[in-house]
Length: 279
Image 1 (cartoon, rainbow, N blue to C red):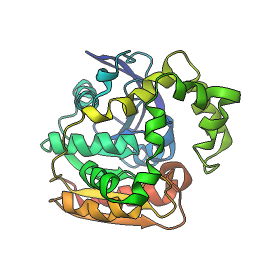
Image 2: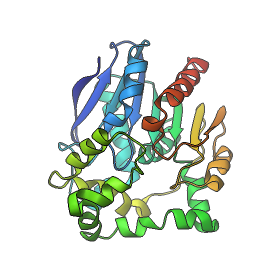
Image 3: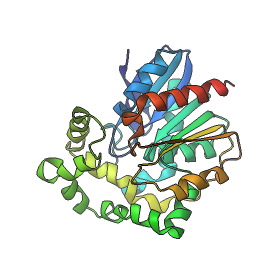
Image 4: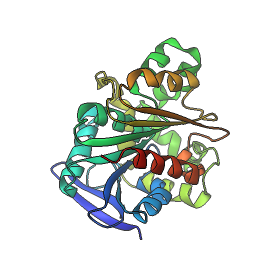
């Protein structure tokens, strides 16, 4: 059974969802934008019921208890620091890390920064950051796909646009690919005071990030052919930035919202990856 959890750290208290007994194989799930830990409901239940201790935090800015106001507080190194702090509080010395969208961006950086702690990495949708940045500057298709970044970085303008008229624009981001009640849940979260600005500050802090090194830990990267945010150029180039064991899986006819649109397929891939790398 999935349970709510509070995880205190020096940065503040993170809300989280947990499933499975303490002592099981430790797996942390990181959500993307504009979502929350609940996007991993299916995976938490499956892995928690299969001998793992699975935990998904609402990340910095998404947890009301960790919602700083300054853009610089959302730099990638701060987000990676949160991963380490959450693991420390849970008592996890080594753990498997799974991330989607922005959660994958953080997961790539965390795996590069602390390979001694990350047993395996599963990145969903978002490619290795260096592959993505190169595609962003060299590939016209990716530049067009990411054009919305500039809008999301505009203070107050993006908040008004996304939340106007019952959050119509925010709802449209999901492309009608996930259940309406889940979208309602996300919209409710982002209409809370300060929540939308905090989430958008991740985009506004992007240019403060340094380069991400190659990843040495066993890595599974899952990309989908109907992803409107991430094109094939960055997806195919990601293997260049993984020096450890690497597996690439492409899901046909699935959108960017893999964890919720194709939960069974993704969970099977995650489980196979964990079983292949037990130590």
